[in-house]
Image (cartoon, rainbow, N blue to C red; front, top):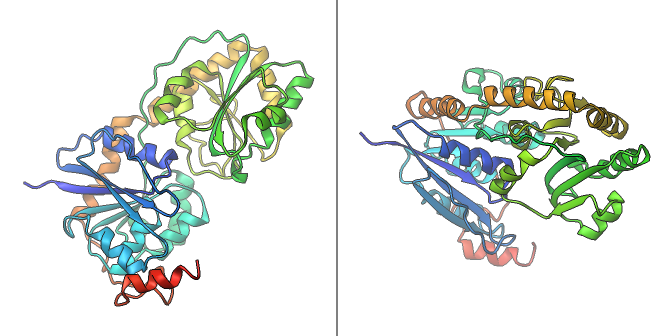
Length: 388
């Protein structure tokens, strides 16, 4: 009996989405499923991309494209990487969804909705005719998507993503160790600007902490000046997920004051390592995991004083710190069991393959007048050289 071929698509940006894909492959145990990954790389932005090693991937394929190309040409070239119309498309971003819609492909398709953002909801709305099932990574996203797509509630699922268990360490840090990790320190949503304000309040109260900040975009010297404490500061432009998982057990507190999130993978990883989270209450997206005062603390956006007050409390009472860290680790391991959560998610993939599918028709989801099925790509590309 032939296996169900799943094709995950990833745009090469890394982050939590890649971690979800890696863990779904790593912990896959369904003998009927065969996992494949296609990396879709904008070659004008990333000329050379090194594919990460993915345990459990039967194949990894690299697809370079240019935004100057005729989008129909891009879609046709990308579609050639699928073996047939039985292959299940697991969409994580816009390009593979555009391929499905613009070409009217009949493949079973699942969209994973990774964020509580208009971007992801817009994709689901635009491509609803091409997508058979939707997987939401948080209950807030699930509720919102059901409201956006009335009549499709039976095709929308909330599935917790898999996260590996992390062996904790017995920590005896005289100075509390803080961990903050984002892709870019200039990302306004991630609110790095709040950290120097928190640090200043702590310094004024004579509370010493060690900050580890992961993120690119600001020079180390400038970060040191902003934090006014280069001695108790470690800065990394980026770390691999494996490096982060190895580092986390050494830390006490995880801080992420973002304005909006879906359900951050980094938050779950930190709590599995025993860190106490200090985060924004993102429309109650994480309330099943982060329980106020029990497994972590929530704050309103921009509340530097609230963050500093909680840090001072935990610094002064290490028994509370340990109790909350232990409770959070237990809750995270219970809710984000890697094997169990992968099995639940794979049920949706199998249902998409075996179940009733959408009546899929082609429509122009993306493209301008230069994007036409019968217009040669070299003409579109040549014309766009003068306009893009």
